[in-house]
Length: 161
Image 1 (tube, rainbow, N blue to C red):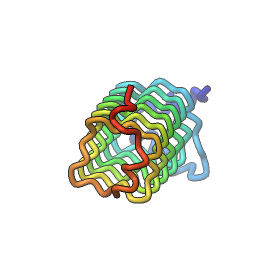
Image 2 (image 1 turned 120 degrees about the vertical axis):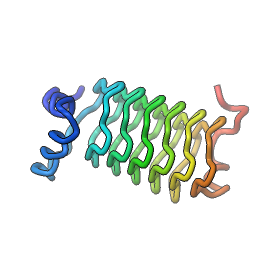
Image 3 (image 1 turned 45 degrees about the horizontal axis):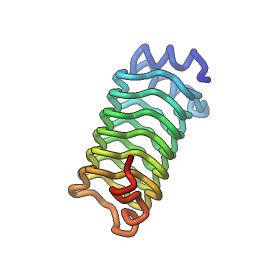
């Protein structure tokens, strides 16, 4: 379970959070299983933060830095991640149904068994991302940097629940 102090700080706003992160560069806050649904975290520095199991459905994370963070099993359904940095992030088994990931950097991200059904990945960078077992039904890949080999590792539409 997450420590309440970083959650309270984050709820004070992105400016307060980012100032604290800048003053505490070695801190790796634990927001495991926190409920941040619908919260505006645009531009937040969430680099290397434990966000496993968090509830962020409908959250606004546009241009947030989530690089190298753990988002295993997180609920990001309908979240706005437009232009977010998710490079190296572990999104295994996360729910990104209907999420907006347009122009996001997902290079080297781990998306094993991730639900990306109807997600908008237009113009996203998926270079070296692992899509093994990912659910991609009706996702938008227009202009996305992704290889056929990566897509072949994902679940076929027949496997989608």
